[in-house]
Length: 130
Image 1 (cartoon, rainbow, N blue to C red):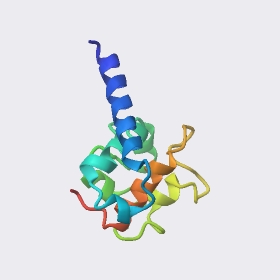
Image 2 (tube, one colour):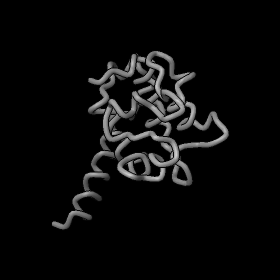
Image 3 (cartoon, rainbow, N blue to C red):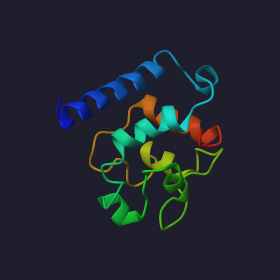
Image 4 (cartoon, one colour):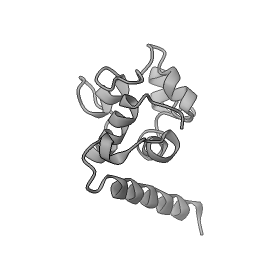
C-alpha cells in the first residue's frame, strides 16, 4: 500500500474517531478527562501541522511548531497560545473558534464544532500532557 493511501486512511480513521467521540456529547462533564495524546494531538495533526511543523509557513510566520506538546505549550515568538485552565483567553481557542481578526486554520476549512469543543474543554481541564 502506498504511503499516500496509508495517510489518507489514517486521516479518515482519525476524523471518524473524533466524530464518534463527540456524537451525543454536549460538554466536558459528559466526555470526561480529555487526553492530549488521544484527543488533542490527532486534531492538531490533521488540521494544523501542514503549516505548523518543520519549516512550514506557520512556523516561519509565528514560530509556533505543533509537532510536540512542548512546542504547543511554548507557543509563538510573541508568547504562549495556551493558558491552561482558561480557554476564553487562550489564543489557540480564540483563533480556532473564530473570535479574532484572523482564523485558524488559515485559508482552510474551519475546525468542526466537535474539534473546537475538544480543544476548548482540554484547555479548561488544564491542558495536560496526558
